[in-house]
Amino acid sequence: MSLLKSPGGFRFLPTDGPFCQGVAAEPGFQIVRVRLARHTPLDEGFRAVEQTLERAGRPLTALCAMELRIPKQLTQDGFNEFNKGYVAQHEKWGLRIENHMQAARTNVAPELDPPSGPCLRAFCYTEEAAGSGRRTFVISGAPEPPGTQNGLWEAMEKIMDERIRQLGVSWDDVNDVQFYGPRAEHAEVARAGRRFDGAGVRWFYALPPIEGLRLELDVRGLARDTFA
Image 1: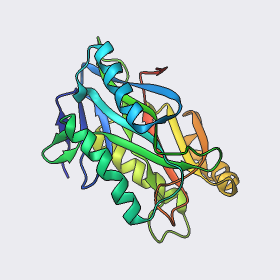
Image 2: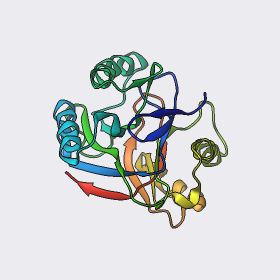
Image 3: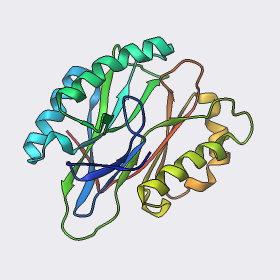
Image 4: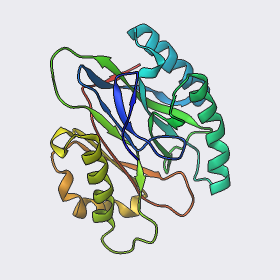
């Protein structure tokens, strides 16, 4: 699909689902991230988004990415059911563009100290920026491609490569890389993650949201990372 533009100051890669594949700030804007208190229940998180954007003087359309945490992996049916409430909130905010969801998303189940219910961990929005500055963007979390046995990390890199290219940014703009997976995969990632050296790599003991998947990767280039 072709890139779409949000009135909130960013372009995004649409897909058929509850989130887009990635977002990038338009000229004159930059993307900033806001981290919430740990395990903030989702409904409270939605209110925090509204309050933060209001204080910043930004419209709700400036919301461009969400980072969720859930108690455990879900069946496909459970995942679809979970997304109903999430999508309903975004529709209430008026965040559909040409029938596509405009915000990127990462949604994982922590292996250590999981929350008791769905939570919002962080979110991103656009703000006006004087001058050109750095190119800022967020790529949604992507799990390992189905059926991948060998060359797993190369396959996941390829997904990120394509989304970065489509958004018109580059790996030079990346300043944050997140791996999500069980403790048993940590050593393999450390050996295979050559491409991400110097980009601020972080590892989370967490699993993708759907049963049967074990690894997830997202990347982003931010102007600022703050706390609510």
